[in-house]
Length: 208
Length: 208
Image (cartoon, rainbow over all chains, first blue to last red):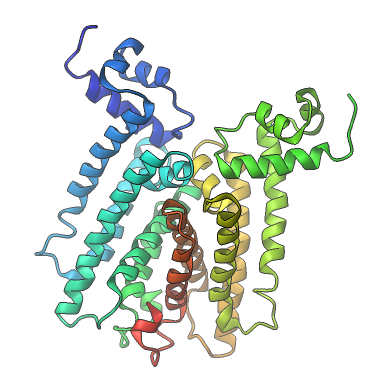
């Protein structure tokens, strides 16, 4: 079987594109190969199965997410602005998908969490690990805010889970209504989840 | 074609069960008919398509949701406790699915929002209308809290959206981790989204 140098990369790119656009169940190996311009026989040279391809595609997409969020969570950025900035970054990302395709596509990891968590343990574990890494970035931020006295002692694990859960819920509605602006509108609320009690001097209208 | 009296109801029940358990794309008309004990020819006596069946099944499930939430949002229930009680009700619902099936299945409407919003405009509109109805229940509660002076004047529409987005995000994580308890852990945060600034006397630990 001839091995072309970038067939693997093209299959991964096709998986990210097609599964994100449709769903895992709706995209078959045949369509993935057609999109990538790779013969079906060659598919199995690189991947054991569609599941195997998705696992490797998730690894690549999670690296992209890390790169996208690295400047947001950089230690030179004030901890107090990081969470809201994360929402803004996600907003720009979803908006750029809409500009390109006409559609808000949501969070690939959130999409797969709801489609496959009860059906595919291997994918579920990968998605869970990616979400966990995001929660840890948020939790580290909350801990820093406690160290600097900007937050009182709180359950940083539960708060970080709440922030990421809220993020996923907001993206769900942006997809449902094909409206990325919702992410921006609701971003300020994220701050209130962690900082509301602390920022007692802020007016309620500012927070909501 | 013989019309059996409850074939339609059995097909709807099968759709709710199978699509909730798997996904819309993964369940075909054949499986739906087998599960319902209905001949495939009879399916098209009742429904134009799988999409048509899902629309009617969503109508039934949304009525169930309304019945489940009616006591939560009853005007005899103090407005200040309704939102947290809604989270608890959803917790009991997800926990009972897990007890029966071993799996947290998530919110059927949220699952379909992420699976189909970019792919099926008819389903998207139905899911959006159901979410909108839930947001209006929450918004009415917020307005009542403003009338009674328990909340200051806020953007009740954005706040209600935030609460329901948070609910969907929390259910997403309960499904991803197959852990209904997460809903209970994070339920208290929902209150902080709308009431945090108001309840300045409450300790931050209580809210988070």
